[in-house]
Image 1 (tube, rainbow, N blue to C red):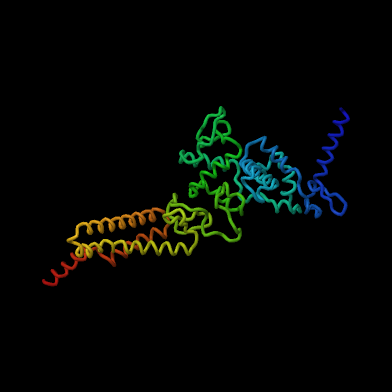
Image 2: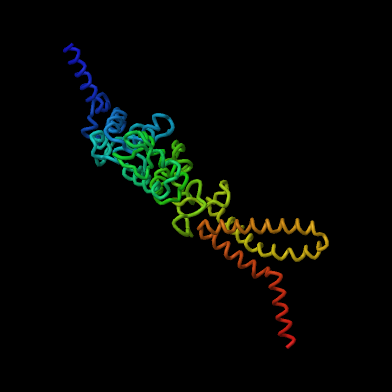
Length: 362
């Protein structure tokens, strides 16, 4: 038995040490000792999964959520490679023992290990403290949001995630941190506490749709006009210019997302025309009232239809103005102003004409 234990220990030690080496032209070079060596370019670190397991058993971290969902194939792609996930963890907690080898390979100046760049960590990956703070702030401001009830206490009872802490209230499992934040930020992407999460998703080309939705880049070099599925209202005030980190404005209906400069132009011109034509509807009544004054039923139907159209367009303009997107707001104001100048109300025009006649008679 002692001999078996000896040989088993020797086997583990031998292959554990060999895993640090790369073979080039029949010779070994120690890439953990000197990752700048040219022979380390093709070196592949074999213990990524073991290091991840060790770290996630020691501490629940945000990137453990990524690892769990990758293992479940809920998330896919290069950013699910175990070396990339290990990098995510080491961005969060670089001082943990599980990051010792990763730091040697990838944090050494002039490292020649290609794996460090091929399977780099997610650019902008959230740290555990960032993720927890975002969840607490979001659920603190809107406790009823979907996802805020996905936390439990140490005795298994439900608690609101606004009280999240490692000892009192915490996610139901390691993957919940990411899933909770996903629920919160996909439903209210314009909240400032969602910016770190959305920015992280914007750095991932594909494979993370299950948590990022459409907040990922198809081409990293083409900065989008705005981001994602859009918002009906900017919660932090008027937006006159949009960047790739701002959610796209929604034009009344969920499918009508203003996600390009061309769509902004058409939307604002359309709103201006609606605003300009709205006062005209008030004058139309004068014409059909005279024509159908002896037909009460027809007149009543026409009045009903006209008033319905007026209210519908009026509320549409109100909702667009409340989006807090500067172009749409100004289009509403300028459109209505132009309409009342071009198409003054029949009563006002008649009164103005009477005044002119009265003054001219004098």
